[in-house]
Structure formats: C-alpha cells, structure tokens
Length: 301
Image 1 (tube, rainbow, N blue to C red):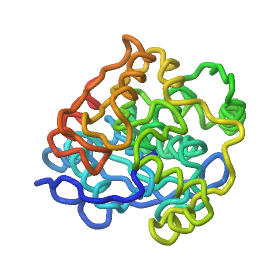
Image 2 (image 1 turned 180 degrees about the vertical axis):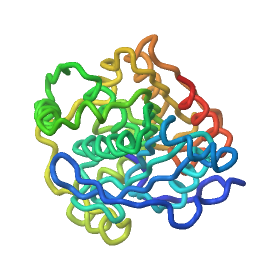
Image 3 (image 1 turned 180 degrees about the horizontal axis):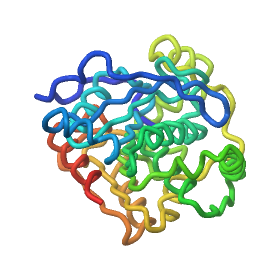
Image 4 (image 1 turned 90 degrees about the vertical axis):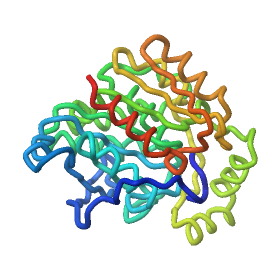
C-alpha cells in the first residue's frame, strides 16, 4: 500500500522521458487491460541504446494511486533508463488501465503481464522494482513465479492465480531474475501510523472509495480479500536463489523500520537491506542518487 496522495517529491537533474515512447495495452491472465510503456536504454550512443533489447530490462511497479504517467514514476523511469531498458505500467484501477484496484492482491497478474512483455521484446534478464504497494506486489510475484510450488496456507487464491497462469503458459515467461522492494509493507492490515489509517478509510469505506475514484483517480474494488493473499513477509521467505534488495527510509511515515527488517529476516542470506537516512516514502521520496544506485544493483547479475 502506498500514499493516498502524490505530494511533493525530490527534484532531479535527469529530464523526463522523451515524448512518445512506445505504448501498448497488455491483457492479464484474468482478462484486465493494462496500459504499459517501453523506454529503451538511453546510455551512450544509439547503438548502445539499441543493444538494450537483448540486455536487462527493469519493470517498474508504482505505489497505490500512482500510474504510468505520474511525475514521480516518469522521473524514476528516466533515471533507470540511463542503465537499462524500462517498462512502466499502470496497475488495474489506476490511470488508463481497466478493472479495479485490489490493493496488492490480483495486481500480481498485472506485473506478470508486464514482465512477460519485456521478455517478448527480447530481454534475457528482467528485474522488477516496486514501490510501496508495488513493493508488496514484486515480493509476492517473486515468490509465485519462482517456478516451484508455494505453501498457500491461509491464501487459497495464490494457488488459483498460479494455476491460471500455468494453464496459459505465461508463468514461465513472467518470472523476475532479481527483485527490488522499496518502502514495502511486511504485513497486511497495518494501521500503526496515521497515513495508513487514512488509507484504510479510503479502501474500506464507500465514501472513501468515492474519494479514491474522483479525488485520487483510483478505482477501488469494493470486495474484501477472500481469502487473504500471501503476506509480503511470507513471500520474502520463498525466493530461493532469486536476488532480493529491500530499500526503506528511516523517515517513512507509513511503515516503520520493523517492516523492512522483518522482510530481510524472512529472506535470510539471499537479501540485501538498505536503510536510507532521511528518506521518506516510496517513489516520491527516492532521489536521483538512490534511484541510480538501485539501477546499478539491478543491472549487475
């Protein structure tokens, strides 16, 4: 889960992505149309940028109330494109995508479609980078698409979703080679901070969903989770050999530091933990220096 408002974000000397990058509409395994944008790597001359088609692609997963065209998302994509090709997309219920937001549950299918698209363009290595709600999604996706069965205790929908992907043949093409979770929650239903209490009001109350639709341009599903999806901290323990980077600010107003530490503990030796001094929450708070460090980590096998 992410902020219910973009608010201010740190400036960057990196220009926004050039006008008119290739756009497409993807269809998820459950039939939702998802808008997506592809940005080739901008490093060096044209020949270097063209060579990014068979190199690494970063798939960027935004936070709650974000979209492919939000300034903070475009800014992060612009920084990442200096190191690798970038795929951005709008989760269901956000931006120009169809459907309604399930706040981290079925969004794993949106991410899977974006990863599969990156591979269809010829990229041999795909790294997912998620912010806040997107961070929880990349964690669950990393576990569900790791190519082995998942212990679905308390999360029967996990089996349903992975079996659906298996029947379409898409699951093998939709795995991530490495995962970065920025400002991600470790557990669901957290209400320990004022911003998270406001977010739960937006998601769970009829009036809150109206505010979400007309004030925040986010269409939220009215149904409660049933069953509750695999928690991010449970997913972090199921990565196996997939490299995982957890990034969190020590001034995050949504999720205190026990969240990233719990994720890192669950992942064990396979994870790196970066606790960023002075950083707030998600893509709005990530400055150019941090985004560049993340991109450097992503392109290093």
